[in-house]
Length: 254
View 1 (tube, rainbow, N blue to C red):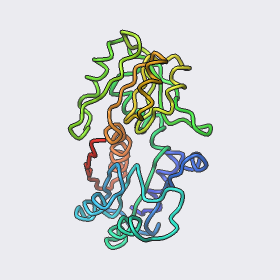
View 2 (cartoon, rainbow, N blue to C red; view 1 turned 60 degrees about the horizontal axis):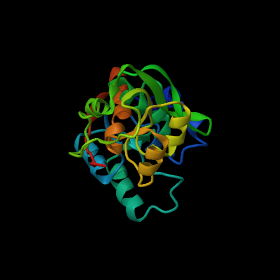
View 3 (tube, rainbow, N blue to C red; view 1 turned 60 degrees about the vertical axis):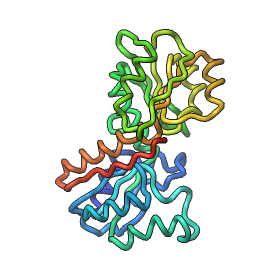
View 4 (cartoon, rainbow, N blue to C red; view 1 turned 30 degrees about the horizontal axis):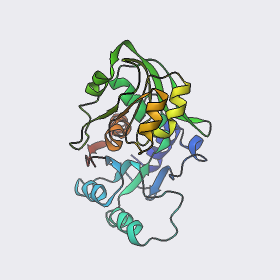
């Protein structure tokens, strides 16, 4: 399958252009000639030396990731930028990236994957940024204690780190907001939206007191762990297009 066709299909499905003005990531094709042919595609959360080398070892023609190598442009291909780009170029390995578009996609996105895991119903977009959304909010049928909310997320690939819960909300959780990765900046929006809990990946020091003062439960399930859903779903999608696929798991524990 031609790389240009894969890129066009993904850009259309993920609404890549709609996030162009709100995302520091250069989403879409970051490395590689559009006229290349893709027989095998590898998928990973991060575009790093380790994942690029693993993709090359798997004889992949394309690496699809959530976090890419270009954030606001690349001024010089030296240092870390060179080390990350070199294995891509040396192995004729193209790189396609989807950051915020993949966070917010209603079906394929990271937040959608977490919401599915939690069996959230009556979902609405959440996590506003520049007129777009990167998360979801929904209701847990029948409510449940915060400890069970943690249990439902315990199977995520957290790299051996446990799911953390700042249990400052009501005894039983019903309304849940989800922003994967580093999503505690949307704590106030979660409170304003009437959520009992905010599920995200990693937190900052100040989230403890902000959550306590707001009476909101915050669940920290790991940045990497909460952002495996989107690329895995893209893998399933591209597999349906007739391209051989492979998953590269490289958890960070963060």
